[in-house]
Amino acid sequence: MQTLLPSPANMAICFFLLILILIFLKLIVRPHPVKIPIKSRHVFITGGSSGIGLALARQAAAEGARVTILARNLKRLEEAKTYIRLFTGIDVNIVSADVCDFEAIKEAVERAGPIDVLICNHGYSAPQELENQHLKEIESLIDVNLIGNFNLVKVALPGMKNRSDRKPVSIALMSSQAGQVGIYGYTTYSASKFGLRGLAEAVQQEAIVHDIHVSLIFPPETDTPGLSEAKTRMPQLTSIISASSGTMRVDEVAKKTLNGIKRGSFIVFCNFEGFLLWIATIGASPQRSYLMAFVEVFLASVIRIVTLCYLCSWYGSILKWHAKKNSK
Ligand SMILES: NC(=O)c1ccc[n+]([C@@H]2O[C@H](COP(=O)([O-])OP(=O)(O)OC[C@H]3O[C@@H](n4cnc5c(N)ncnc54)[C@H](OP(=O)(O)O)[C@@H]3O)[C@@H](O)[C@H]2O)c1
Image (tube, rainbow, N blue to C red; front, side, top):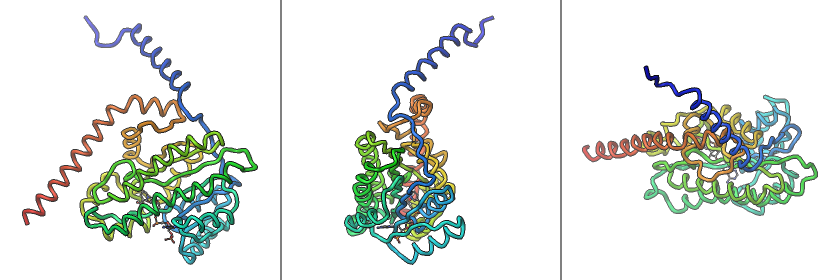
């Protein structure tokens, strides 16, 4: 009787091919793997007085990093400092500046001293359909979420390049899942966060010779004051679509972020939907791990089908919502 099982010879050939592919991927993945130590090093976090930034600052301080947090509101910075001291017994350095003000950021970075890990986490979403969003708000979102990152990276790079300690250093940019896929009502926000990807990929190429490693973080909705504020004005369809990835706790997102930075991962995702989006949108992003590259290569087409199902559901929701509205 004929069996459906592959013959031992065929299995051996498949196994051999698999090993060959893994060896090939190990030879070609770039940049090379790296570990970024944070203990006793200077971690500079923008937007460190609230939400994800505050949780990052607390966790980095607890791991023995020397932490500086930057935001605009001095009172909230002082409250954050007290909160971190209560949790860790450690005092963080606080700096008040607006990321949109290049000169103020330059002065703040100079005052804080050479940076080993720069986490550009500041940002906000102000969800609204493009047609209804005021031009001033569009400009402000792009200014804070995108140009603010240019200001910080530009100002911090010289000091990071000329550091005395030759250990690898890191620049992390806080994007969003709305920076991987455009989401209804997150139109301006998505555009600003998509921009971070180009910045991150190109800066990684410019900075690699200086042992500077870039991470791009893609959190889903995270339970923070920023999200609560966004929810007060969120179009209903934005809530429906963004709910497909669930809401994460701020400490979990901060932990995944910090671990991703320490591993030197270029792309850092936080949940299962983040895993799907990572594969679906990988494009030509750097990859240090040959095992991760293997996952990317072999799951790409299957996950494209999954993303098509998500899109089918989202477009279905949009059309249904409009049909319901028009029937009233
Ligand atoms: N929460 C989410 O659902 C979510 C999901 C994905 C991605 N993200 C991203 O994660 C990051 C943090 O979000 P979050 O929800 O934790 O925000 P949050 O709770 O609102 O905190 C934002 C922080 O950024 C600071 N900030 C805002 N504008 C600034 C400016 N112009 N200059 C300097 N600092 C500024 C704020 O302090 P001041 O107001 O005092 O300046 C505050 O410390 C953002 O980039 C956001 O886009 C958030």
